[in-house]
Length: 162
Image 1 (tube, rainbow, N blue to C red):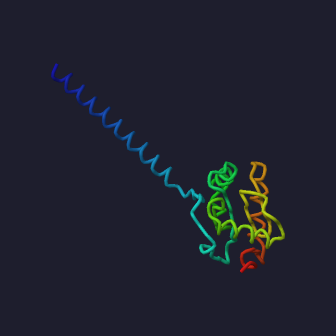
Image 2: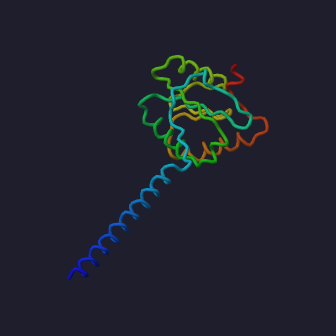
Image 3: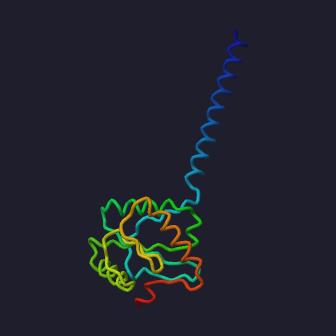
């Protein structure tokens, strides 16, 4: 009977050890999965003073309204672009409903392109301006980013504005 008890204890220890190993493996998989190189391009409080130039990338300018549902959808779309897009552009995000300097800056950049502001979100890629956002615009936005990035003479409206 003591021998049977001893075997049960050993079996219980093996089962508990196996469960612990499985938990550790699952935890490692979850941790590694969360630390992949997904880049989040979410909103940062930025102004004109944050703009920098990188000869290897283009600048993309997003003017948004805090609380705007269309802006949030565009931001989610930009966040979900594949990582390779981070080689193509730097994103500058500026809130315009509560920040009048950013609002004026948006109007001036759009004016530099010969257009008038039609609302938010307002996304400027090279010499193209996208107002509003629907899912159908996603293909056009990705195409505009890639095309501008591939140009030898990349256009940046801010360089002309300055």
